[in-house]
Length: 290
Ligand code: MN
Image 1 (cartoon, rainbow, N blue to C red):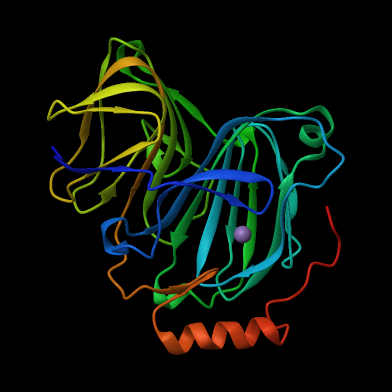
Image 2: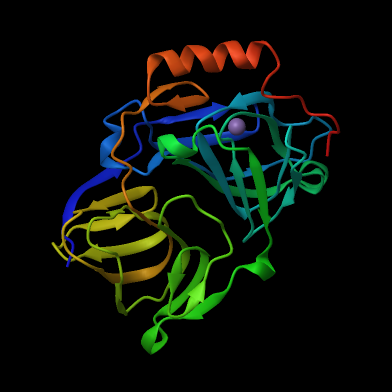
């Protein structure tokens, strides 16, 4: 089995644009090899927004060298990008955007959330790309609720929705460049679950709700991210209260990480090039606003 390496807790909150109050769980600025292939994780909300006529969110900005994955639990997020991708996602849905060689996008609250107000909770995960794919063509996968298979865990311990990777014969719809598992887990109090996690993988699930006990006796609650050893296979969780967990496990990309703001590459020279390319319009423009 894997053992607990450490428990990551949010270093603090900030606003992304005027729409997304997030707790930063980790970022590539602080020893990113610990979380590879994941580069950054922001936990937005849970909170409530009042009805507004304002367009809350983040206006056009670029990315290069990785993927942004937005998972909505409550509320709505709309996105449009220079690759022609776009759409609005609601609870249980996912935007998996491959910035790769460069993309310009905007991220806003969905129209209905703005009009009616309501609860808001989301996660944005940045997934690194290996050097060989950093300059691949950009792309966008809008993943609806219906496309995400749900499997029942043994003994009525809960359910898993498979966004990426595979569990109990169900395969997630997300195309990924390197092997990883991204699952939306709903776990029932009183059960102990053992989840498969390959040896060598970084395994770092985010707790959104509830309370769980790890194999070493430590307890984790909302906005805690236990990080497990790369050695060993599988993780056991004792579910003390009904819990919502975003399961993240992936094969590390053992390459240099050099990032600046919205660009994450392997060298300083590539970061300078990213700024030049963005400023000269090479990452495109958004032609139609969703
Ligand atoms: Mn963005």
